Image 1 (cartoon, rainbow over the protein chains, first blue to last red):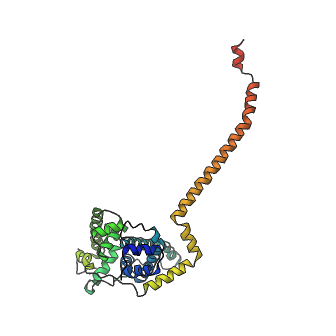
Image 2: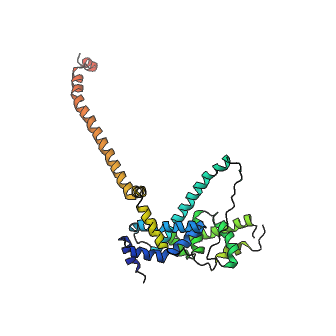
Image 3: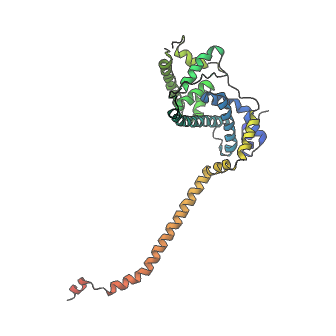
Length: 191
Length: 105
């Protein structure tokens, strides 16, 4: 039986392990699906999902209840995923030094294809191309697109997670689609 | 490489997507991770030091100490004035003001 949300939050703040288990079990797919949309790697997504719940456990006392619990969980998931990607990018920047020392100076920039486990079989190839293009978008457009298209949130829900207005989300999604079309046209010769 | 579908097809390829699910027993792994992190003192210290309340307390303490030191310095300067003032007064009393000499011929 699901705990009432207010009661759940109260018990989480008092460190109730059963309440925390309830939170993990009811929100794990929400977090994992959101994170995998950003990271496009199952092992990394597993690792970051655990990190998200650890963060939630440690910072639940700071949750003021101004938004729904799920909205806050989404925010932690998005922030943690983006932090992970930034850390990875910083490590890659320093990785450019190694080819200077080695014999092979050719850099492989080709990203492996990511197949989201929830995509239908007939869309696998197309979605792999789409996910590569999503990685090229600015962070805020990526966030809006992933929350809306991968996680299935409404524009209003996306606005609540991103702490912005509905019109801002509409604008972000419009720009994201325009940029994606340009990327797909340039790199994959798609009309 | 020419594909036999359009960019619109690609953008719409996420329609009817189902949620990806994590591996089973995620809660067990989260618990283990929590225990691991809580047993590492450097992580606990880092987490404590980076808390906002810690930063606020540190800032307040810093301002307080600065204020105290400035106050102490001002008191020292005032003390120096207290010692120096009588000497200055005496010096003034014993110096000859040429303008005063000229005023009273």
